[in-house]
Image 1: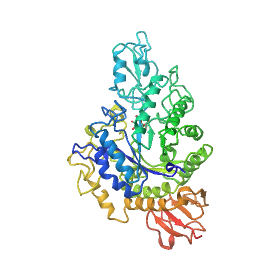
Image 2 (image 1 turned 90 degrees about the vertical axis):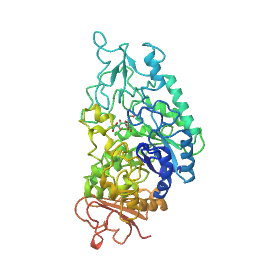
Image 3 (image 1 turned 30 degrees about the vertical axis):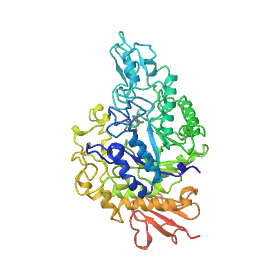
Length: 526
Ligand code: TEU
């Protein structure tokens, strides 16, 4: 079985992991210095958020050169050193590919602005004439995910499409030059030894050729970045051609290279289409991430996921957090209760069949930082929504490594690009390393057990009968996980009473009861 079927992949948010230069922004050399920490944590691979040259209008998801490293983060030789150091420690490296849009500073977009309407240069993007008497209205009513119209007008009166910020013009994937360019970008990084790609906005590359207005059948309550059926730009059938093409490129390389799609597609059948045998290997499972802390919602998300993937044979992925969503400690209720639930969720996630993702700081139990001063907030989602949406800076605050005051060893600069809360003194990696009851110790122990047990990685999942507020399942014949999402203690399910406890997210009650918001891993007698 290829490594990615059961891998645990750690997401490194490059800007916020470790700063080696003292400019307050994380960088590749900073990551190299912390690779031993990741090896000791026990993960199999890292995924790096975009580190390419970029004006940083959307934290690097606005790429101006797909074949180099942003000077803030280092250079190509730092990248090669990072690859070498990671591989020596047995860690694979997955990088982020941003194919839906470029930066407005990309040479292609500059050339498009300099060229006239209907030129070869404009054909790589979606330039159109406007509506209204003199073209003063946007070509259609699409809204940007970050707020406002998805169209911006240029000097000669034409408009261009940007599903995200105006500094992120969408590429036209019907243009063969665009297709060929990305083939070449994939090869550039595969030749440098990368183990795979995370595909940004994988459900967005194809647009309705007529660029029709938003149809009436769409549900306004569904978040704007989530696919719905017959949508003019999400999850259209044409995207699959791109992925078949990329799969054949990856397959032509030695070793097991992997793709993971960022596809906000909740319909399990539509989702599975990205993972057909000649398309992408894996995709983030956002159904699990979005589920509330509730046994039946979580069980529903798990069943739908496993059921949806059965026919395509792709492994499931499990994700609790990333750089776009509020941290799970906060989503699950903040404070002591949020942390307690996040600890239980860790054991749940790491005992489900498939691969799992850990977002940096999740293993430290970091919470969402809500009090970032407005003038320091960087996310375009905040500014473009006029502050109505707090944006995603709160989950992107730099890592606390050591010491008892900010910047907690992240940087030698006293003011990292986002400020860290002083209360993180108790959450540093250094403080948690010494504490066997810490979140970090829980993640380390769980990952150690997971890697030592074949049944946890490859065994089937079987649900056990339990109370409505409890999730209980076996993996193979020798292992079980029980999660109590309710507030009251419950006895372990019949049949598990004589089992040996391997790990618990919090201490069990007297008589072996499972307290509220607690999970336990048990070994079953042979
Ligand atoms: O995100 C795609 C996306 O649509 C959502 O993640 C959305 O931006 C977010 O949930 C709103 O709250 C990807 C990247 O992960 C994100 O960081 C980028 O901003 C976006 O693409 C544009 O490249």
